[in-house]
Amino acid sequence: MIPFALVGGVFNLIELGGPFFIIKNFDWNPQLAYSLCFFLATSVAFTLNTFITFKSKFSLSNAGRYYLIYAGAWVIGLVIITSLKYFTSISAEYLHFFPAPTVYIWNFFMSNRFLKK
Image 1 (cartoon, rainbow, N blue to C red):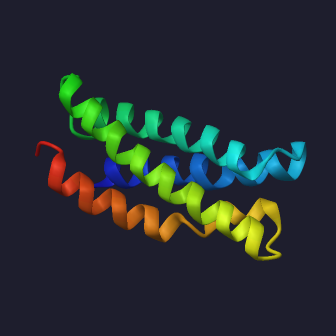
Image 2 (cartoon, one colour):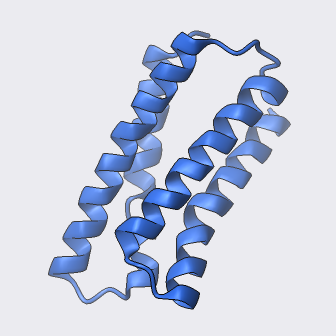
């Protein structure tokens, strides 16, 4: 359980902290910063969970399902960020925090249903 929680912490640090840092310091587009950090966080989490947390061998089918699930989460996140960007006055560096609860729920249920246990 501890390795899984640590990987989750790394994922959150990259997914939430990365866009905040990039937008605040480099004034990037929020969707681009979110996308870059989301895919980096997803790749790091998949690798760490596969080889350290679950001590599994690499499985192409699991990797494909994992990335499809997280691609769905990324689209959900982009829709929320884009909607908030155009319909609210929330500062750009905070937009990526809002999709997190919905994205985490999506990832949990989809991973639980479609990934091998």
